Length: 334
Image (cartoon, rainbow, N blue to C red; front, side, top):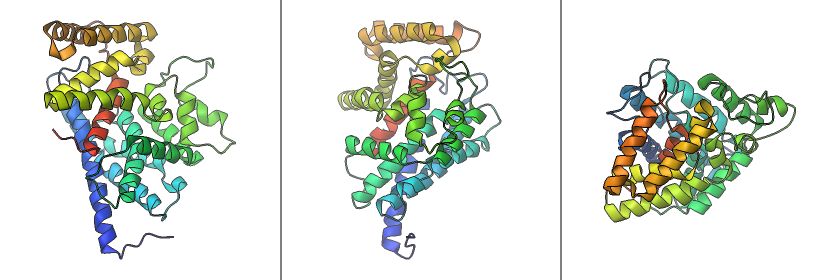
C-alpha cells in the first residue's frame, strides 16, 4: 500500500507533525547546551578543546532532517501504509550521523547518543500524534509512547542492527564496559548473531549493562521518565524557569545513575565517585542553596581539571536531552 500524496488535507497535517517533532528535537539539543550550571558538560562559556560551540550547534541543526523523515515513517505506520519493520531506524541513525559530519570538521560526533535515544521515540510519538488526528497540542501518554517505541524496536530488522553497528564503529572508539567476553566491542552483537534474524531491541539488550543509553532504550526509557521527566516538570512548574529545571534534572540524573560514558574512559571507580558527589549535591539542595551551588562548582572543577582529559558525563547528557524532548513534545515551553 502506498502513501496517498494526492490528499492535501492529510499531507498538510502530517507535515505539521513532522515539522513539530523535528523542531522540538533541535530545540531540546540546544536547550541542554545553553543550560548552566552543568558540571563537566559543554556550554557557551565552557566548551571543550576539540568540540566547541559551533560544533554543537551544527550538530543540533543536523538533527532536523533525519527526525523529520523518521516522523514521516511513524505516521505512515500508523496509517497502515508501512509496516513497523519498514521504519528503517538503523538506516536513519546512520544517515543522521553521516549528515552531521558534513556540518563541522571531523572531530567526532556531537549527536551520537542523542540520535540513538531520539529515533525510537520519534517514530512512536509521530505514530501517537497520527492516532490523535494529527494533533500536536495533546498531552502525551508516555506509557503509550514508550510501548510504541519498544514495538518499533522489536519489529526492526537485522539490517537495522547492521546499520547501527557500522554507525557505532565509525563514530565512537572501541571502548566499552568490561564483560565476560574479552572480545566484546560494538561489533560483537553482529558477529554472534550474523546467521540469525534479530532486531534493535535485542541489540540494546545485548549492550544494556555496558552502556546507559542502550539500557534506557531496552527498558522503555525508565530513568528518562521516572527521574528525568518527573524532575524537570516538577521544578519547572514550581520555579517557572526552564533553565533551572534542566540544570537540576541533569544533577538529579547524575546522582541517580552511574555514567557509563565516564566508566568506559576512566573506570567504574571514578564513575561511582562522581555519582556519589552528585548525590551529595542533590541532598544539599543543588542549585537552590548556597551549599549546593558551592558543591556544584567543586564538582565542575574536578571534572574539568583532575585528569589530562576532561571528564564528561555524556550518557547523562543524552538522557537529559531526551527528557527535554519529551517535555517539549508534551507542551512545555521555555
